[in-house]
Image (cartoon, rainbow, N blue to C red):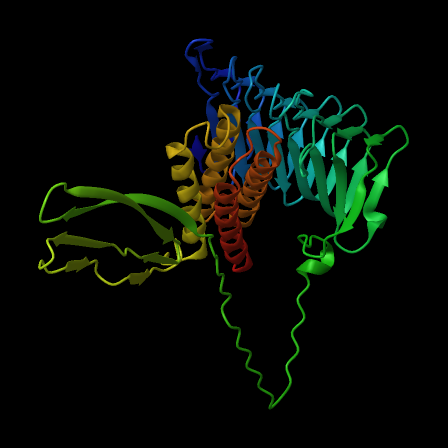
Length: 443
């Protein structure tokens, strides 16, 4: 739903799939509320839960330049062997006083909050992205960013579950001017409180609980929202002129080569003046090395046929080896945003054409597909020109989560992802993230 002004959702929304053990199940629906400048008010239940045996939770987005106010429950969990959904709240001020549940038996989902002003979880409010403690499970991620961030007494932020490999089962809170914690924050791996220049803005109130103890990390690049940020000073120096040239940022992505081996059967027949005739077969191995940057193919084979003592020898030789150099994938896109979308599209195509055994496992494939869909939605939203920085930040976080799942698949003791395929995927993800960084730097 898109509007220029106020959006009010006062009726229950249900978008749950069907499924059974024989045919599997679909995923929860996607609910998208976006306004240009009006407030978004959600007072009703939004249920886009997944179902057993393997349906992912859906997604919920509320994004506007106005305020986001959530008092109705947002349900995105799944009881199946799949992933919890993704919730995103993006506005000037964001206030949530209900339960947002993206938990799962296997992969916890995500909750992303981005506020230009105040991000607040009021009494009774819950953010939950837990995962059950099962083999292969991963806890979810909660990220909250605002000028000021407040968790009232009686609130719960929970990202429990397995956390190997990191990052997983984490809560990150980024505040530019003030962070007040009065409720409970608990994560399976770690909690992190980010500040721009001084940790003195962080206040843990009596009765609050943060488990494990939060790491406090300086992030100088957090948005500035103090009064001094709005002050502009211009100094004019007579007869002085300064010209600054900035070279464009160039991103180079190098993808690993893949090698395939073809077995060619070459038959040699030798005929003597008298019987018998002897035939021998030789197996020649021809190796083809293919790289996204360069493709080199070499074929060399010889066939010799001899008939009698006086028969001449005829030799057939294949054409000389050729080398074709191709540009890096998606390098011809008109902008960094287009380049990122192109690389995410490549990853999506790879997942669509790969079997569950190759990735490995149906659950891993579903989780990766869900993360790519979410990243692509954020990139498409950024393309509209509205809330570009926040959307790019969300897309980057989804790719970070995608990378984490791939790394986990590489480290499994049994049924691990093939190292060559895994590294290829990781390199493409890294390229897409770099393109997003370039696009964000131009905002």
